[in-house]
Image 1: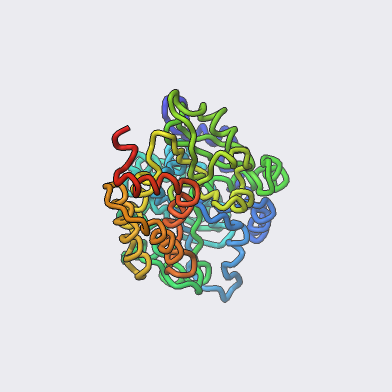
Image 2: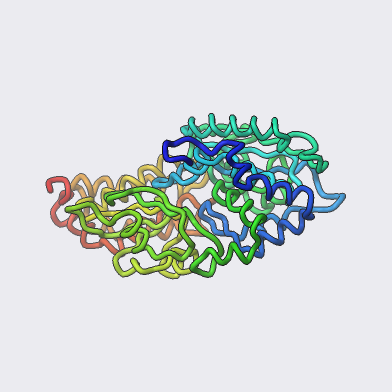
Length: 418
């Protein structure tokens, strides 16, 4: 993206080597070789799950008897609280995403691609549609791409605007015109996805990494990282830091470096208390974790998740109970209602936290909240929404327990009169 906010145009993108990876994937490489290269590079999904991308592609059935058509879906339904990285990628460099989708579609043999876009991303939609038209006119979409014999077209689908539309199988139901509820797995989408056909769903940032791997190789990509996982990552920071924003940095960059060097540290008059490292559905990390390298493994070992890599910072003048109440209100509202623990449990959590904030808390409320975290944990619900919603609450009880107890002892929120 240019400094004035203009996107990188088609001619500009081509002059910088754009579509060279797509040309190579279409004319010089077998689809299986593309998949193996991406798998060797160690590219992990940047939407939050962190699964190896090439390995995911390898699960798509191949051969003459494999079901057709096959679909590639780009998940651009970015509704995680605190997350805005995919929006800037599409607004700033839409051809990078289109090229990534061409390469991925070639690898899995998909004839049709969809970009499932968040409803509120109007500028993204406009710029993406313009870029798709440019790519189609230049022969990078449509029939017989660049004389390769490979056909592909990409369509934009604007989401109806629910958090569950971003869940992999809920997204597929929504794309088919149904309600965005999760599907039972197995079968996994790679075997039976959109309209029962093999489908791969990848995140925007994940696909934007793919052209660079094909152009420069797996070893080059791994060398960009400061950690075990390969490549770079978009890290962001929001909250009361001096320069909230988004930066592309090597995986493994320490939290302290992102906060102090790139985000400029805390604003004057505010002190750091903790952060959610990867959006609103991850566990709090605190002072003792500031030197932790931001990579999937180390963050998980510290009890949280890298998630989307976009940090939400908590300061000492913000009530942690109120912050968690705000998050749980969002997740309770966005529950699809498909399973009882999520539908009923998140509402209980929201109401308990609301009572604490209003000065109506009881001594056993903290134990009740902790019990609900277990009820909402992995294995007890149909999808990851409720377990994700439980993460900030569970870790807030661990690190900010005294703040919760003050709400009960003083029968008020101590921050509301500060």
